Amino acid sequence: MATNSPNDNSRIGAVKDRSQVHNPKTGLWTKRDSDTGRFMDVKTSSPAPFKGVRKEK
Image (cartoon, rainbow, N blue to C red; front, side, top):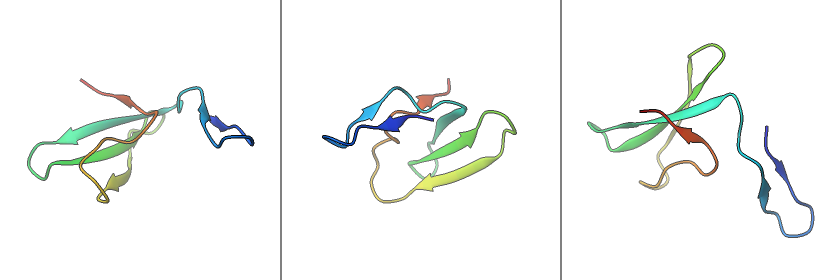
């Protein structure tokens, strides 16, 4: 997992073992666990992708 710096609350490194995919039907981003392949979370707060999580092609 990525760590957060205590000084300025910025992320150091990428989030590992996760990826995200864009659902064109709903326009939302879905986060997936790379180990199990299960979907973990859907971002509904904004149309922007999750920060620091790699995108699937």
